[in-house]
Picture (cartoon, rainbow, N blue to C red):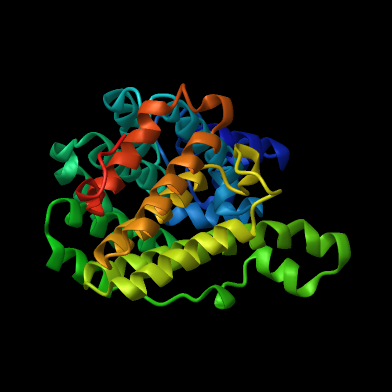
Length: 335
């Protein structure tokens, strides 16, 4: 804290000596001198008095710059991000040090929680669960940001589900509020609704892509719900609707990487056809089942272009996982 230096700067700016400042505050010159060399600090009750005397805000008195704080937090995030997937311990160390410096930062807490959750989900690091639950609890208890709290609850429920603690996951989910997109008066939606021409287009194009993704995910998850309850006819309908939404917004007539508005949605697209195949198999429509499987493999064979071979193992891991979950091994051996 550079409070002493700041008091000296403000005193000199007013053209006052230490003795004059001391007299104005009813203190001894020695007290002011000690402040300025940081041998001691003003009593807390004097802080607002000093701010009023110098006609500055408390932030200005303490030389606090929110922009500098956010810049430093962004630097912490960037540094930790370089180790996020390859070195969990190093990334965790950086985030934890950041929280020592900025204990109120929701952003750092959220990224640390994401680190734990991602490594639990992707690499089976279930020993991280206790740490993840603790940081989620801090966010939920301490944050004044509704979106940060909701995000933390989502992660907490996901962690509970990975631990087979379904009832606890449901309880967390049940505690979440409803927030419909039309009620979110953010920059994107207000620009689209209220501005005109190029200004409107600047945001509405991104909004369109976001809503496209939301719609096909909602259709796909509806299908999973029907699948889990054994309603294969409705599951098939929902999975088909999800694929229709994806295909309606593809650029051009060919399946290729650049055709997808959002990178990674190729995987969703592929899974939808395997999910349809699983429903068709359950319904005894085996000929259609085979065609849906072929379509899924055709998507992953072309949607990554030249990168398919380089990413083959990762892509096929998801393909095989979905293939097995939907019982397609009963019909045909997975490639």
